[in-house]
Structure formats: C-alpha cells, structure tokens
View (cartoon, rainbow, N blue to C red):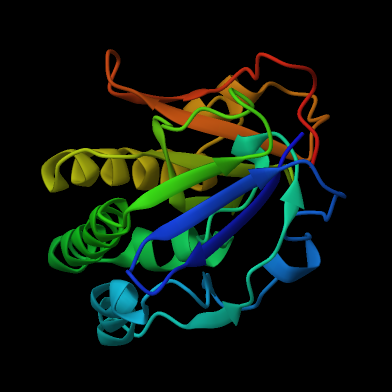
Length: 230
C-alpha cells in the first residue's frame, strides 16, 4: 500500500509522493453521481488551461458539465486504483445522448479536445518520492495525472488508464476507441465488447482498463497483487 499526494513546487514540477500511511478512500460513488453528462474533478495544482479546449468544446455543443476543484489529498491503495490529479467522469447521458446524436464534425471536435487534454497532461513533469527504495516504480506506463471513468449498464465503475507519453495522434486513436467502446456498450445488447470483457457477474467496485496497442483495443487489467479494492 502507498500514500499518494500530487503537489506542485515553485519550479513547476508535479510531485507524486508515495509513502506508507493511513487509508483514505478514493472518490466515492456519491461524488461521481451527477446529473451532468460530464464531471471534471481537477486537483488545485493542475493548471486550469489544460481543460480549456475541452470545456470550450462542451460549451459549443451545449453539453452540460460539472467542474470541481479539489484539494491535494492522500490515498493509500494500489497505485492504479488511486484517482489521478485530473479525473473525468463520463455519465450515461454523454454516450446515449450527445455521442449518439452528434454529427461527424461535433464528434471529431470533441474527440480531438479530449485527446489534446490528455497530451497536455502527459507533458507535466513528475517526480516520485517513496518511503522505501523500490516501493513504487519511478516511472509508470500510465499517466499519474489524468484518467477517465464511467459506469457500465450493470453499475460497475470502469477506469480507463491513459498511456503516460505518446503522441497526440496516438491519443486520438485511444480516445476514439474508448468513446466507441462505451457508445456501443450503451447502444447494444449484453454481447457488446465491454460487457463480454467484464463478465456477467460484477463483483468489484472498480475495473481497470488499459489500451493494448497490439490489438488496438481496450482490455481489462489483471492486477498482479491481490484483489482490486477501492
């Protein structure tokens, strides 16, 4: 277990501090239950201009969203279960409403804005401090700044882990695949790709998905150490 704190020092570095500590639960279900199709939770250290292109696209296409600024917080949990400093939660109406009805230009613009936001987040410099040598890898293949969440039709929460450093073009492919996966999930029957991946008996409060470049698709991540716990 590790305590995660993301801070920003005067030189502009973002510091992810990982040390042993008491547990504080990640964002609760209640915080992500919002009437808005999109919920943004931005830790106060994260520059607000990272969101500007995305929020402008939401406003342009009249997509309601809720934006919360959060204080730095400490979490003790398996790293990938800990909320990133910038969390975006896409609710069911976003996929059933906007994505289903959006024209090609509106979809492309929104997808590009999400990818651009992910790329800007990846450009933030991060240092890792640990309470003991080798407790947590100094480098991670997944972003410690930004991630995306949603709920499935059965009520399971899924977290999309974003690669930590790829090109804008690759982020656009990844975001397109994520949006397509969720749109098909809400529009289709129980045999859609996401439902098949997760199985028919949900038993975990949070499922992790990572993008597999070999198959160009999202896959469920199996954690190597114990059951997934929030």
